[in-house]
Image (cartoon, rainbow, N blue to C red; front, side):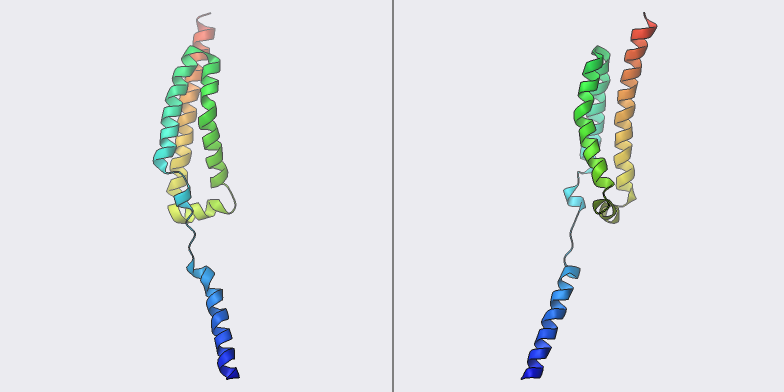
Length: 124
């Protein structure tokens, strides 16, 4: 009877040790889809481009919400625990496309700022 109890205890401990290996935590389903990221980039960039045309403060003010979104995304992608899990699940392409969206947003805002500064200082 004791041998049977010892075998049962060992079997239970082995199965309890194997449980974390069975569970799979998905990270990417909690991250924004690339379509959402690109929507923030294109809409935020286009609105900012138009905002810089009217007033300098409008362009700067319109840059804040998308920039905050991209800052949170950057912090998640560079986190020591979450970042490698995202790369493992979604691949390096997710990083490239996400940072490509950030670059597109930045280029659109810089183009609007350049036009605003050029119009202000060249025509004066």
